[in-house]
Length: 238
Image 1 (cartoon, helix red, strand yellow):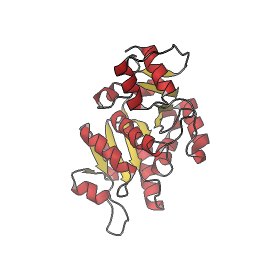
Image 2 (cartoon, one colour):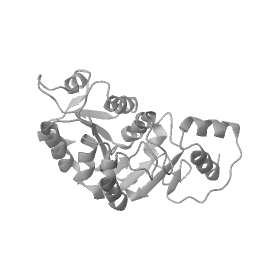
Image 3 (spheres, one colour):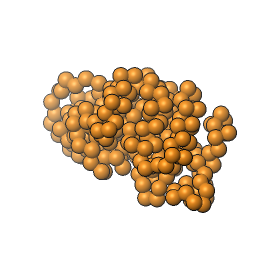
Image 4 (cartoon, one colour):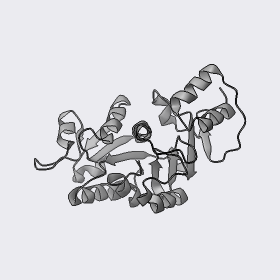
């Protein structure tokens, strides 16, 4: 396995982990490609947190400031659809933590967008599509701002489409990058639960905002299952 082979396999298989893995096993022929802004698992800039994943991304494409990978990070995730109350809670949490941590999320609508907007200079957006693809389109300007001042990261090259399974797989990277995982608002069977499961497997601390009985969320169930209760007054202690 060498860097040129990894980049070639990643490029021709559109970042598909299992096809890249099979190509490595079979030692398939490759060509050297001149591609900028790429990191492989063999490089010193490769995030050490990913080495703890069962399915480690072989190649990463990026735009922005790689130094953010080596700072203290926290992942904040939640639903795409949130009410005004949880919009405000997510904003408060992000504003409180933005100078203490690099904020990691997935650039989706809802919670992710609020997190990234808190400090585009100190945030990492992990994509479920190609590094050159803007999805959702509503976040194009936000993504461009993060590319200029923060860091956009993807294991998918060029304009690889935002397929559903890409986002589920992407969530392992979000869980791995954060020293801790914060959930401000979760819905049952959402992508948030996939991120939580990856975080549990990585023995990450998980914090969840509690809800009252009238809230249409799954937050309290997560707390009953053992997640830490996140009170705003305790943010300074995280």
